[in-house]
Amino acid sequence: MTSRPRRFAVGVAAMGVALALTYAAGLVLGAVPYPPAALQDLLVRIAPGNLATGAIEHLGHWAMRLLAIGLHLGVLLAGGWIAAALAGETSFARKARAGLAVTAALFLASVALGLTGGGMSLPAFIVYAIAAYGFGRVASGVPFGRALEPEVRQGETPLDAMHRSRRRFVSRTLAAGGLIVLAAGGALRLVFKRPPRVAIAGAGRPFVPPPGDPAFPDVAGLSPEITPNADFYNVDIDFLKPSVDASSWRLAVGGLVDAPYELNFRQLQTGFEVVEMAHTLTCISNEVGGNLISTAVWRGVRLKDVLARAGLRPGVAELVFKSAEGYSDSIPLAKANEDTTLVVFGMNGVALPREHGFPARIIVPGIYGMKNVKWLTGITAVDHHYRGYWEVRGWDDVARVKTESRFDVPAPASTVHLPASLAGVAWAGDRRVAAVEVSDDGGQTWRRAVLKRELSPVAWRLWAADVTPEAGLRRVMVRAADGTGAVQSAQLANPHPDGASGYDVLTFQVQ
Image (tube, rainbow, N blue to C red; front, side):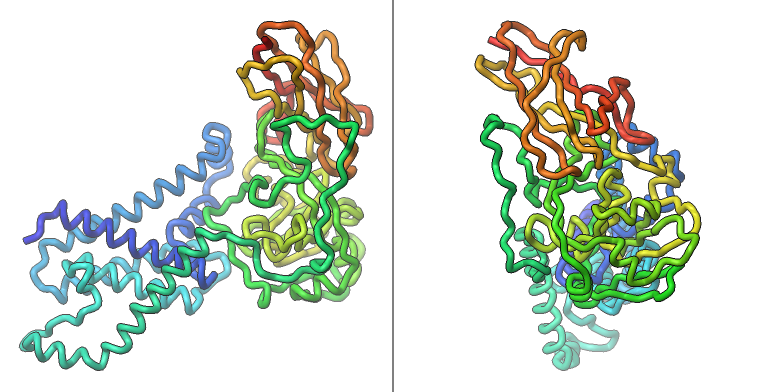
């Protein structure tokens, strides 16, 4: 009899293979939820607001990572436990049935509970059935190499079983080949991540980076003015990002409107004036001096034009945005009607990458990223205040971006040799950046930094200042002023509930 520890290890390995199959299927087919991710999404959605907020405050974005790691370990250990529990059975058929039933229940329950759209797609059902069957056979004591072989029924000889299996040979060979192709396709999609191969309006017009500024110094280590798509910060509630098919995607516009309607991907791009806008997006959980902030040139259409076609009725107070992942949030009508609030489908000259909301997302200057809903599927006009996913968990309803600034150069605790520069970025939402100042005497005196020409009124500005010649340990701070003349707050505040504030402080050695 096989030892229980060995059977446990086999069960863990078999469950790992089953998970890998479902993950690969999701990458290739796009309609197969990944079980640990489905469970994670469910737990995040039902978690009490104070629990979710406390986890973020104490663990930051490691909260989601640790939850994902814990769920993976739990599912793998469950596979080991099932295999160990079946180790003492003597009837192969009984073991196989038990393994299959328990495994199928685990997989199907995790997906059914995690789905927000209701029901299970046919591809998901087929993939989970294959994964459950394979795990059930292996966990019941069949070696990996014999997992697809037929059982020898009572009263049969192995030769009889072989004859009975001939009719299944072709189908099983095709199934195995399909699994290999599926796994290979998933691996290729994972390794070679590329933007969706979708033409977007204006794609024939190549993306032209903004012109340079001869008056601004070239400082090594300073953030690029336009963040490459691959480096753009990314924060979501989901472990895995939704994969939306542009050909079947629809954007529903409804609620308190005269003429509800739907747009497909082509109609979104051709039915309205297409505009481009450089805009800085930042996360409400960004720390002072943090890197959860990036800038892109977004291509899309004005939200107010999309709403005008539906005809808003009197009494509309807010617009609610729904995502393919089940996420939702809202903005006031006045903000929705601003020219800079866009439904975008392009990012830095290409279609939106999957992780940034393909096929379409909302961009709302002046408001933190949590309200810039990705994977947009619905816009609903309502006559009341709608509290979104993070608002019901204790975060600010308005989410207005604060005026902030950051050091990029030099690195903290580094040694610099004169001549040298201080440099970084400053942002103020939709209020522009008018000035940046640095101080090396604890804020008693401030001197102006040089600002790079303005990219757009809703984008950050790069700044630079020379390091003063005094040698020794230096401690400097930076602050910005917005276009209204208001200077960023010196009061230190954590990100929760309405965004961090305070001066970024840098210590370095001058030699």
